[in-house]
Image (cartoon, rainbow, N blue to C red):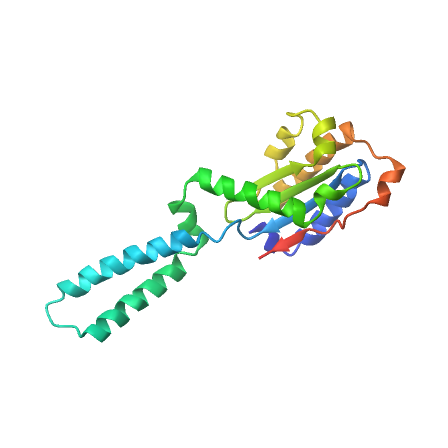
Length: 202
């Protein structure tokens, strides 16, 4: 998880500051450990483990009292449910399309939460990094969409590496190049400055 790197917060803040010296765009970086609870995944895994556990307990030749039977199943379910919350398991038991949608939904929520959509010129740009899904979503407000051609940002977005800090920073710099080309900096843009430090979500 690159957002747990000791260099992350300062390096990203410096990168955003450098970008905003060249463009009227307001860049906000949000880094999250995951974009959903995936509670259904852990619950389903626990249910399957308890079902298998029940079969095993019933197959044991000596008798098991009903109380211990229930206790054993409960312990299996609790232990499995906790293990199934892990990133490794979720990545291997969910579809890529579902993880992608979780990231998109979370990014849209952060757009509102961080008021990226509320700058006077509507030039906010959210860069949302989600570690579990290893994905980066970039959402530009209406002022950005109206002035930056649809495909112009994509090469820079593709460079935003969710697993490598240096790659992520290189992608931010490339994003800044595109924004500076289509949304060059003007003096009065400094009147609406959002904090440059990244927001970290657990």
